[in-house]
Image 1 (cartoon, rainbow, N blue to C red):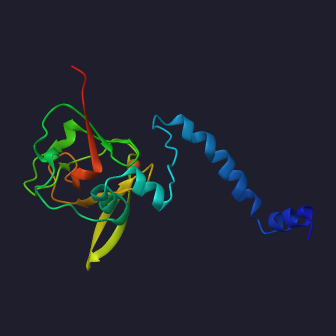
Image 2: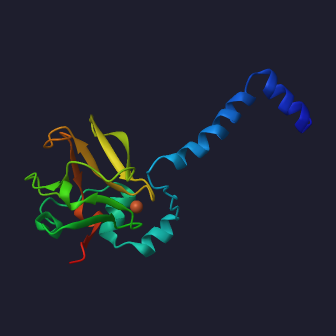
Image 3: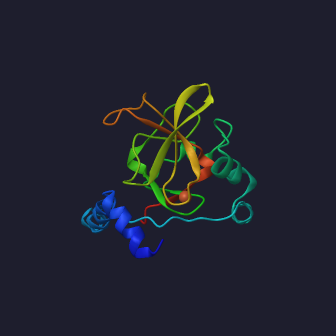
Length: 167
Ligand code: FE
């Protein structure tokens, strides 16, 4: 089948309108104020070089750090929490709170910073979230957070890098 015949077939099936709609949708992204995030895709070997073993366990294998083990639990300065895998800014310090769980906790993320999926590691479904740029696992979302969102982003501290606000 030639390319022309193939396009004709797609058109007769009504599929060409799908691709034209997708083409129209693309420029709309630039109208939103949200940053465009380029994915960072590395091999497992490259991640092992880039990360400490503890970071690799959490970010690339969905491990969980021991509660109370992160120095970020007591971090109270103004600043931004970045993904330790790729540097993407994930949380503002203004959304951090003490959940008493032993893991750094936030009630919201920066816009478009994370994506979610359901996981069943503990039988009951939980919502796992990961960095929108590198896909690194960060933690889980629970519904027992403070206002205004009511959400708790329970984050492994080892997966974050805190950057204090310039004085
Ligand atoms: Fe990342």
